Length: 103
Length: 103
DNA sequence: TATGACTTGACGTTATTTGTCAAATATAAT
DNA sequence: ATTATATTTGACAAATAACGTCAAGTCATA
Image (cartoon, rainbow over all chains, first blue to last red; front, side):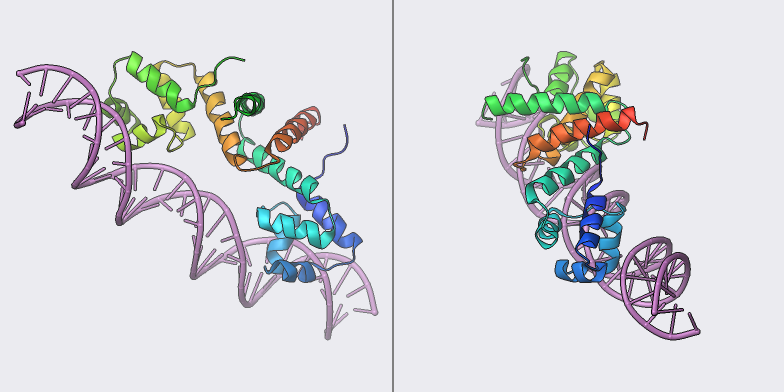
């Protein structure tokens, strides 16, 4: 399987590759540098709006970044749960079921 | 696929089958009747502790009920997301990856 | 040491969650 | 119909978590 990067790592790598400073990107997002720093180190979660802006600013594929972001959000919900893996599978089944039943 | 009941429906059906009143079960959970009513109608989410207590009170399999509860929590996170299905799959992959790498 | 980039933690504000309460609405028996 | 009991509804309050600012701290480098 391909390596597994956090959203924060993806953001930091791409920002550095583009030679942008935390300060600059944070300004574009209209938040304090401290928050962006924390987002990149996975100490805080970005909001969906921030993710979308970041994809644009850093020229990352928006869909990929959102999927990445959402999957992290999902895993966060079950991070301390023994039954997390089972719950994920059941969630997928329900998702399929609902799709096919247009509920 | 087998039918898909909500946690609330499961709780209500079993409570009624046992002939218990909202008032009685709510008292055992130490919450107001109104909340339990809302939980059973999926208007509010139960807490994990409440789910565990409910499994005991209603003699439901605890593991099944927790899985049910967690999967609902997961789906709640992505309910308005177009990319929810993709995110779920990615979350599962990451889960597997992390397991095999004992992170 | 001086400067610029980033990090850390204390703090306040806002949003969300979780609960209470009382009134409204069933449901059923007298 | 009236009474009694069960459930539902929505307005509100309290507790908790999320989100942000700020200032002081660290780290690297000139």
